[in-house]
Each structure stands twice: as structure tokens, then as C-alpha cells.
Image 1 (spheres, one colour):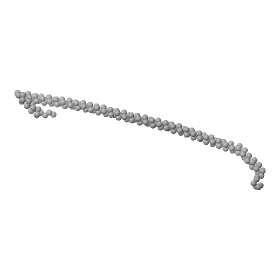
Image 2 (cartoon, one colour):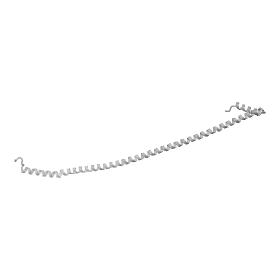
Image 3 (cartoon, helix red, strand yellow):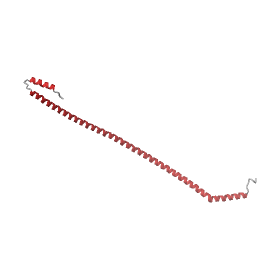
Image 4 (cartoon, one colour):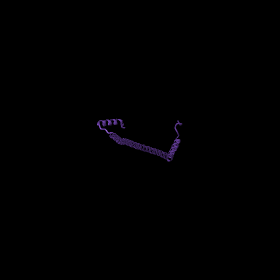
Length: 164
């Protein structure tokens, strides 16, 4: 059993070296290790805060983006409405203009027809006057004593004369 139980000197030196190593580690290693761990914890905390801020910023950007999309849709609808109104107004104006032009054309056509009618009537009057003068001249050139002979002559002359 001597092999299993250590000697007192060995325990003394082991404890002494352990305490010395513990003091040495505490003086030189634990502070830098603890500082590194604390710095790491702080950097992780800062990273988490930055991630949280980024998340909040993204939420704000999404809200702003949704607002911009909503305003864009409203603006698009407004522009489409104005375009439809302008189209309808243009169609109404074009119809009105076409109607006015048609009325003007019809009016000028009626005026032209009326002028042609007057000219034709004047031409017919002139031809009738000329024809009447010719008939009267022929009647006067022939002396007729009988009224019946005059009527027969007028009828004969009218049948022979062509009216254009």
C-alpha cells in the first residue's frame, strides 16, 4: 500500500508548485483571459444590439417602402383617372367639332343648292321670256283676225318649241 499513498514531501511540493502556478496564472493569465472573454461578451452584445437596430431599421424601411408603394399606387390611379377624363373630354370635343363641321357643310351645301336653284329659275325665266317674245313676235308678224286661229297658232308653236 505504500505504492498507492504518496509521501508527504511529494504532497508538499505538489501543493506548493500548484499554489505558485495558481498565483502565477492569476497574475499573468487570468486577467488577460478574463479581459478577452469580457471583450468578446461586449462585442457579442454590441453585435446583438447592432442586429436589433438593423432589424428595427429594416422594419422602418419596410414601412416607408409600403408607404411609398401606396403613394405610388394612389398617384398611378390619379394619373389613370386624369387620362380617362382627358380621353373622354377629347372624344366629346371631337364629336362636337365634327357635328359643327357637318352642320357647316350641310349649311353651305343648302346655300349652294339654293343658289343653283335660283340660277336655274332665273335661266328658266329668261328662256320663257325669250320664248314668249319669240312667240309674240311670230303672232304679231302674222295678222290673224280670228281668236281661234291665234290659239291654234300658239299651241302649234308651243308644241314645236323645245324647253330645256
